[in-house]
Image (cartoon, rainbow, N blue to C red; front, side):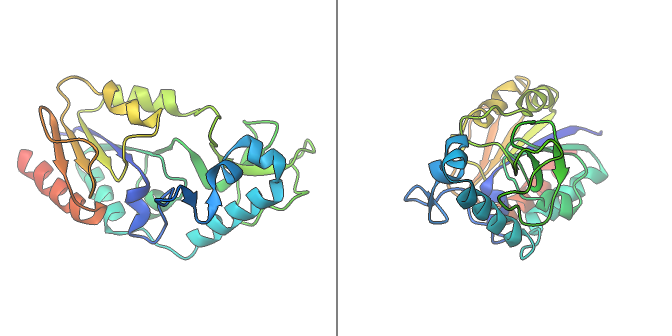
Length: 228
């Protein structure tokens, strides 16, 4: 029977592709204070630093490939409806072949006007100070920074409310509003949580798979296949 599988992914999903997780243990993001490179105030203070930071992240995307976990999730589309809700700003889910991906925190390969949030374009090059939209405003990364609204969160909530199965991969479930999404799943919807250092424990409808994304998705596929 075809089911709607909703998959929520975080930094641990892409870590095995070589993309560093959001913050190191010391609170720095690849050597930078996140408040300097991931807030509207940081962009206002030093736009050149912020643009350069995301230019480097965008270039890094050209050097990495989807890992086996990304590919395993694509295979679920053969027999089920699959919606991926990701906190990641990379495009590895799409490059692996997933057809329905919601990006909560924006996308590295897109840019937008610093004044018009709806003026969004696909962009694979560096962004420089002085690169403006048609209305004369500085272009900025299409990234949801700390303190900004998460425009896709309501759509994500609606999707979770319709989930027959909810899967969480590679996220600490500590960053809101994304962390609250599993609370929107129907009461009887089983939840599978894949993470090498899980923040929650198995119990009730929650099954924890304490493994990396690539190892855990193998177990997930086995479980789902055995339940059919």
